[in-house]
Every structure is written in C-alpha cells, then in structure tokens.
Amino acid sequence: METYVVRVWVPDRPGALGQVASRIGSVGGDVVGIDILERGAGKAIDELVVTLPSSDLVGLLVTEIGQVDDAAVEEIHHLHGSLPEPGTAVLELVARVIESVPADRMSLLCGGVRDLFTAEWVSLVDLDGRTAVVSLGERAPAPAWLIAFAEGSRHLPAGSQQAATPTELTWAELPMHRVLLGMGRSKPALRAREHRQVALLGRIVDAIEL
Image (tube, rainbow, N blue to C red; front, top):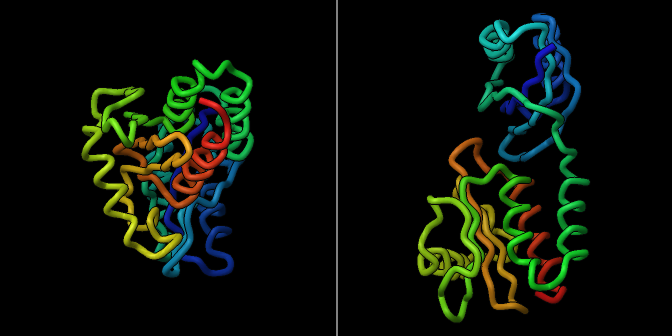
C-alpha cells in the first residue's frame, strides 16, 4: 500500500466529507487520517491521509474527488514514513526546547519549526539589532523586510493579523526576548491551523529563558 497526504477543498456542508471519502473508496483507497486545517466562507480545507493499492491510482483519485460538487484537491504528496500527529508534534517540539540548555534553545526552536512544518526557510530576527540571530534556508527574507511586515500588521484588528498573512509566510513575535520568529514555504499553502500553531509556539517559548 502507498500512503499519501491529500489536501482538499470541501464545501462546508453536512455529508460533503463523506462524499469525498466515498470517492476515495471507489478507487480502492482508505482514509486513515483527517485534520481540519481551515474553515470559512462556506469551505473547509482538510488534510487527509489516504492509502492506495498503487501509485498508479493517484491521477484517478484526484479525478474522483473532483466529481464531488465544489470539492477539489489543492495538493497531494507521497508520505515517506509516518505522519506526525499535529497536536503532539508541536508539544514534543516545545518539550525539546524547554529540556535543552538555554544556549541551544533558539537554534533548536528554528530547526524544529523547519522540520515540523516542512518550511523552506526559518528566521529568528533580533527586533532591536534588526539582524538574524538564526537563519535556516536560502530563501529567508531580509531581517528588515520581515520586521517591517510584522510591524505593518499591527494596525489590523486583534486576532486578524495572521488572517491577513500570505499563505506562504507565517510569523510570531516574542516580545519578552525582542525577537521575531518567521517561517515560510511555497507549497503546500500555510493554513489557519499552522498560523495558530506558530503563534502559540512563540507565546510559550517567549516565557522561558533563551
């Protein structure tokens, strides 16, 4: 059996996800995991873990899902190894950071964020010095740009900053330590759940010694 992670847009109405699961079953697939990434405007974006008898069925799977009214596949990729459970994976990262010595915590946090979110870049920026304390990946934006982006979001109503953030970028400010954690990837798009996870990571880590 081959295992795939499938991101799907599904109409947010009763029975729609069941219809998608039925289409997956029609090609011999089985849904073994479901995670709701985002909901709003009558749509839900779900991440499904699907097993298929053969990789040759991927194209047919996408076609079948598209047969459900207003449903579409955003992204699909083969899963190598096991998919970490989103909630416990974040907690495990927090635990590793807290259990490490303070001198290692910044680099451990950035490396963990990169691995957990399959980020193309991660940057931890000093807000006062406007320089990168830790920078992973070649596509990280300049520290000044990242700071300006976060500052430009502060005029937005409380709770809406992340909603206005592009789907290829998310960030969290750690005000006690005067640093900004940013990370990005081009695909798959970052969704509301991931924005919230990064924001919460920032809040927790900001409360410990770095």
